Image 1 (cartoon, rainbow, N blue to C red):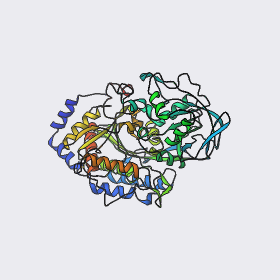
Image 2: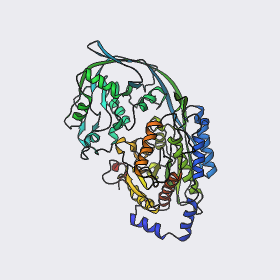
Image 3: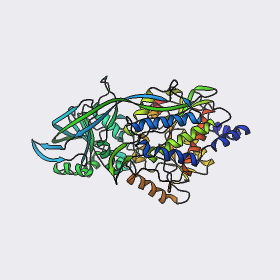
Image 4: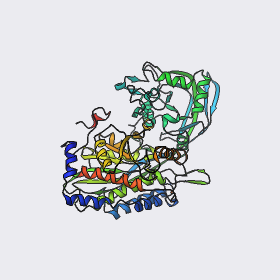
Length: 545
């Protein structure tokens, strides 16, 4: 890899020949509000049946995307096909209420899913847990670089661990403790599930807390009653707990109050480096019945091959899946996902169209990837990054977006994961050309950097940009923008109300976000510059300078 300085990147942009400047200017005009509107109105319609994998809605969705990729001039990415098969297992867990006992005496019962949202990821039809001991393991984190081991001194083998969401930095605000209020990967529920399994625990329950999770309890509640997708584990190489799940804040308060503990005080104590977990002196009993369905879902991708170095690429991603048909709300049971993630699929298609309208073909290849099963834990992108079209060491950068709000033009470009890589500096340049400024994600404590498809690329060492205007509306200001985001999270996110609303949607801001991502990608595919991780990034070891 040849790395050139940022100064040279700026000089390249400033001194590019007039014909290439004109070429870029003409191509970016291909990113239009009308195209964005058309794609979102279609992808967010009932015809797509909520775009759930393993359903008729998947067939409609992936064929729509393949047709659009062909229409804009992208070739099939997977050996003559737009589709990559992703083998998975769908598990629908049915569970009765959960009994909590102490010395064989029943203390109380948790109702599911309202108080406890529990599923089994095991590829077995029956899971029977009888009087299994419960252990409180703090935040459930093992992080040697932070001097943290919440499992130290605990015997959790064949037991159930109860842990807190997020990581200690959130609750102290101390930037010397993990990353302060910015969540690290150790704060994510996916990490906590994996770590509990590595420690030999039979089950794990996470105590829900809205600020720490980044969403209300309704999200894990709904997730637990829908079928879940997992990578197949037939080779036995991937450890999993017998069951995983969440306790609502109220249920956790009841449990610990009965045991003469206070959750808020325990959370404060668990932030200390010398905190040690302890047995709760209680047992848990539950029965789960799993319905198993083995099938393949599809990633969708097209490629525009580079003229000079087709073996190197950048990737634009936006997951196609949503939640399908589920629990009714206000008479509606179709979870259309117009914003999550119809808006971002439209963003990616618009960028792809701009690249194909260039007169001078890009030097490196461009891949537009629509992964499956993002809502199930980034499964499609994890599979893709293990079976890529172009190897990860030749993948220069990933650009991803998720749930772009169509609320008009924004003054800001909010970078989720700000400070991680050189892509920040390129974004500063591109944003300035649009008379916009860069800001870190004000909600970094929600861990969004670890919750969308770019993170699978990050874990392979590929610097990735997740950037969108979301903090300050040009017309209405910051408070209004914050209110729009709050309204979406509380009232439409992962709910049937995430529909296409032509009377209120304004795609001008998403068009600017697409133009910005196109601008940065254009520079990368026409130079030898490989962005790298910042020296203080936790991912620098994955792609060194």
